[in-house]
Image (cartoon, rainbow, N blue to C red; front, side, top):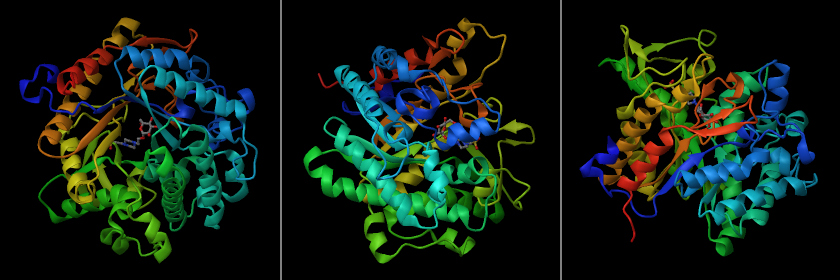
Length: 476
Ligand code: GBH
């Protein structure tokens, strides 16, 4: 195991960021408590008759316990997101601030700092206030000024209220994935030739304007840093054919080059422009704030698949595949899996894919711009099954193996010169996996929703603790 690997002892710097991540709608509950109003997820999940985050895992009440767990696990950082619907329930720039909502996050931030845990705040982890969806279709807004002004005003509120203590900000979680969700989950109708491009474009503008505001108005005095988090599932060609190679390149460009690459490089991806002539460009003034709009490279990563080279027509593919540009992706070839099988459609364990991705991101985006990479999510889901005992759940071998192998790749990459600044596992707690409900469990802490949301640490927390003790150089 990594925690005994002599080659990787002390390879990470003393200030390496390590801990876990979460997101407001997935953990908080308290959906109508203290003035919170519905987000798009409350409305969508209820309308579809699915499990909701009404109570989630009750972190709105159990946050002290969450902080205690983070401390017990030896974390020096925690990434969580703010529920816009809690702090400004109606969403818009002229709508009232909900002081009780602000108070919740103030308490959480103070408790984290007290425990020597650095807060990383995600401003937007997909839970848009429903009133903004109703007013102008949220990120699909034809009038982009509306969503930009409302978002930037919301961001300003958080910088003003929390920025004295919070020094690490992530504007958006996985804009590419939100494009897909907007198209296939949140809305029943989607004009696939236009809407996804609008949602992606508006998200990048919202991000850029928020960073611009932070840099002008807050960074000089508060001294923090700001970035964005992208999700990239790595895709590799299944064989030597040109078709498979092109398909893999296209799928990667879609996830990375569309809502992230231009930000760093200052130009639209040529692969994408060729495939999607309707891809909107930015104006010269917009480019000025889009280019270079990140102080670090936030990366969520779960799995790797093979591209077969087959291009499939829309209608025959799921949302994720469609936005892999219609590129067919498979995890098994003649019955042989690409890595240890994931549960119920969740990612397989493919550590070498993670390594290739890190090399790619470093070479193409982070390295040339001097940006360090922070893994803002990485983890393994185990499906809940009725007959499993708590003892079996705590003994989460597959997850332990996943973490061990993936962090080994991270350490090796760092040793070979890729600047790795941090790693936040997904997730601190079992939680609501969006429209898939509570059955996929990504948590390193078991949550018993039938018994007062009782939290029980799983064994992977010990594995990670031992890994960090071994790999992070002590500054004493
Ligand atoms: C993240 O999204 C979210 O930020 C988080 O809220 C969520 O709970 C977490 O992941 C766990 O799902 O099968 O190898 O092709 C992740 C978006 C897109 C990542 C689909 C995995 C499939 C990988 N996911 N992707 S693979």
